[in-house]
Image (cartoon, rainbow, N blue to C red):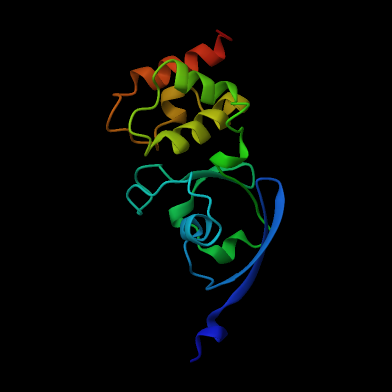
Length: 157
């Protein structure tokens, strides 16, 4: 079967802008974002939905881009780390991670920030910060600095 027959047009909103791509419907959304569209802030850690490094906001909720087939993105609203602040104007969460050492090697940081942002904007989504970040693994910080950064945002420090 020719490769073109296996392609599908997928339209979605990414970081507030409309996109239309033609790709295989089972392409991982993570690969589409990173390789095809150049949004490399979303990281691949495990590729199996276990580490949270690829956390994005999918239709307003945290989701793992490595587990989402591109076809599911049709009509979706997607936000990556590139869509929540920029170099000139960091969000409170990004600034706190930077100021209080919540970021070490950088692999988990975008996913942590996406999960933390969702929790801080939707405090009823989890009972504790620890629950909100339960799906995100960090091998560098031991989480203390990450939780410290989130507490500073909650206290407006």
